[in-house]
Length: 127
Image (cartoon, rainbow, N blue to C red; front, top):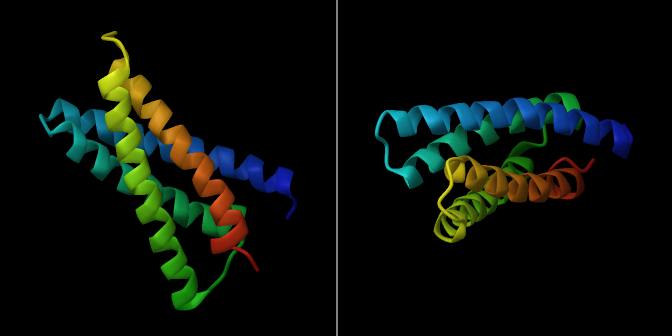
């Protein structure tokens, strides 16, 4: 599959996965969950959704065994830390506006998503 086709599928799956992440984040916040714990949990839910769907529909990867799984764990562990860190920085530096929490989420998610696409395409699902 070519770059444009992969990128199109990645964006569509990413949008769906982002809804999972965003919805879980706001649900957890509404339940009184600490903001950083809510971000961590929602990130895990969203990225797990993205990984499973991208593996099958974007990169058409089958198998891969321990090496692919280890690559996934390393990538998502790294982008997990980056996502939470960027979210925390944005919450600290953005002005007090009604959509501050959502804006911080979008910036953190965008950063992690860009890293994920490049690394999934060039390392994790490289065949």
